[in-house]
Image 1 (tube, rainbow, N blue to C red):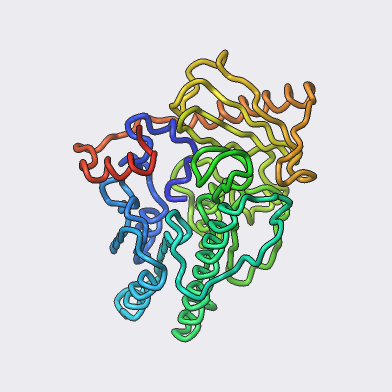
Image 2: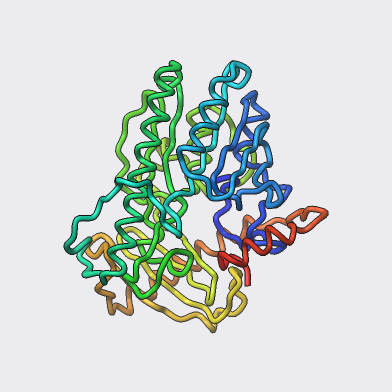
Amino acid sequence: IFYCMGSDELNPWFAWRIPNNFKTIAETLKENGYNTACITGNGLLNPELGYAQGFDTFLSFDNTDASCINKQVYELLDSDTFIQCPFFLYIHYYDPHKPYDPPEGRDIYKGGIIDEYDYREADLSEINKYDSEIFFIDTELEKICTYLKERELYDRSLIIITSDHGEQFHEHGDYEHGKSVYNEEIHVPLIMKLNNLRMKISHNVSLLDIYPTILDVLGLAIPHPIQGKSLIKSANKKGRRVILTEVARDVLKKAVIVDDAKLIVGFDETQFLITNKTQEKCLKIFNFKRDRWEKNPLEDKHLEKKLRSDFYDLYNQYSAFNEPCIAPDNQPSEEILNKLKSLAYLN
């Protein structure tokens, strides 16, 4: 979302830091006269990791709930200095994360089978807390929209709501996130209010498409080659045919989605970069339109061969975006590195 490069192998120096020479959406908008601000409840969105690039105001709090984040938002928007110019405001809520701790009185799940899965009792308890956290976020988002209307900012604002990942509750054997490329992790909401534009997109899209869509709506040029596609360009109305997603924790897993089909491949390595294609093995193939819960893997060698070809075509295309990354003078502090390790982002 920040710099529209989806593959962490484009940054060999440090997979969790934005390289200095990658122009972020905040930098692009600031150069075009926008006031820019970031208010985040995720302490890992930290200046040491490059996320402050292009922001006039950057407030990072560690695991702070949405109501506290909104107080900071209201204070910022009450400032005539900030809203006297066009502005870009990035708000990052952290609430729907482990440990789940929703406000009292939120109780969403009432029992029974969810999404065709027969969950264990322990998982159902966690799902209830997780869904309650999401409901809490919904109420806080509603308050933000109400506030924007009261300030007469709503009608002339572009508003985009999305998530960087979902959560697993042992649907495919794993828990939390960052461990697989199944739909419970990678299929996320994307809601866009784009002035007077009215359209419902039924084809596949990627979070990479947010950056160019924003610039397209605002009539601004894209400053450098990117992997995303504007969702309002007529040439892209049929959507991107192929989408690549990946995760590297204990092993490297990548998935390619082509139309209705999805191929998951694994590699015996823990870096995003594919160094040895002979280590690649097919893990699963699904038709995610007919089998959205991915419970019935397909046995189709012809489809597998086609998907592998599409996967490597897109992988090579993305790798072509590679450019030397300009590393910062100093590495992140021990505190940041320990936080990344505690969340399994670093070994």
